[in-house]
Length: 235
Ligand SMILES: Cc1cc2nc3c(=O)[nH]c(=O)nc-3n(C[C@H](O)[C@H](O)[C@H](O)COP(=O)(O)O)c2cc1C
Image (cartoon, rainbow, N blue to C red; front, side, top):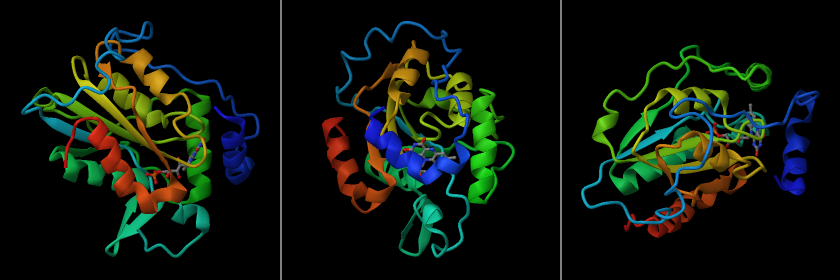
């Protein structure tokens, strides 16, 4: 993680970070941790196969769907378009779904996360400390219908949100092409691409992951289009 981006983020979340271990967690299951998928690099930018079936999964926690008029740090986690308020990752997922013609699946915890900013920090910090695997509402039942699975998440505590560990360990993604996208508050992708690649040994994790700062959401559509072009999803 670049020192400058860690500092930028610490400036915003300093109050909640005292004593937090910053060592990355690891993903288990799906063949366990270990060697990176042999063909991860080789096929990283290959275009989607003709007729390939695409699923766009994402986790997003914009705290509340009230209109965007509250504290700045809350606004930063939300994007308002055409009167509708989205989480930042949710909005990116929606754009990818439209562009690829895939299906959309929201990853949600069984117990809803708090709506207030401070409570969200408190709950997620202790989940991270405990290396928790929060229970999910559901998994994708018809995963066999898909060849390519986009996986979207915000950076939380310099890492994947813990519900993403639950998802990636419990959802069978063997044999799938897994394409990552993320929104951050200063830490870009942190170590998440490495963590996911090391954990999903039987999937092909595309190394060209998308990342954008929550401060640049105004340009997310054009940035995503450029990235999707490089992956072979032509407009
Ligand atoms: C609990 C929590 C922890 C966060 N930790 C980080 C972090 O360590 N590094 C970072 O760059 N951004 C961090 N952020 C900022 C989010 O990545 C950013 O606000 C993102 O846009 C959230 O996406 P969402 O609205 O779709 O959930 C954190 C946000 C929350 C709520």
